Image (cartoon, rainbow, N blue to C red; front, top):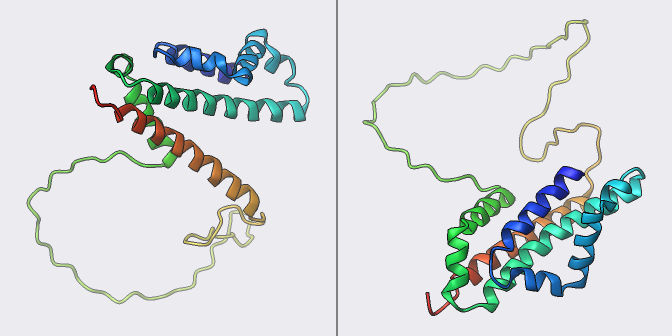
Length: 191
């Protein structure tokens, strides 16, 4: 838990290089209280009970969201080029885009040069279907994992629709905040 809160504090420190960011952060009472609790060491002190651990994990997710929402507000409030130049100097836009790619699951595009296409002739063969029983080393029948759309890799577990939808909603909110940061970054007349 200490490492994850340490990363949050490093991110908070790096975002504070942006003008207006830290002022907006301190205006939010919940953010201010959370910062003092983390600096006091409360998450590590209250990490023994499962309900406390879950509460602090949720607090950390919210804290990361606060960081990005406040960053978006800092770009939205400032029309001048100073904030954007500082962000470029600190390489924030690249980090935001990388985080957006990680959250959305997008893989970076790679330019592949096409070589001369070699013409090959392929023989068309008809597939034959054979049912082979694969036996494990101990002689019992081996369970084959199913692959394809609609098959779960976790056999015997129930699919939790509510957890899936909650996870999807949280992911979409993260993507929305990151897109808002980019929109507010580029939304200026003086740059």
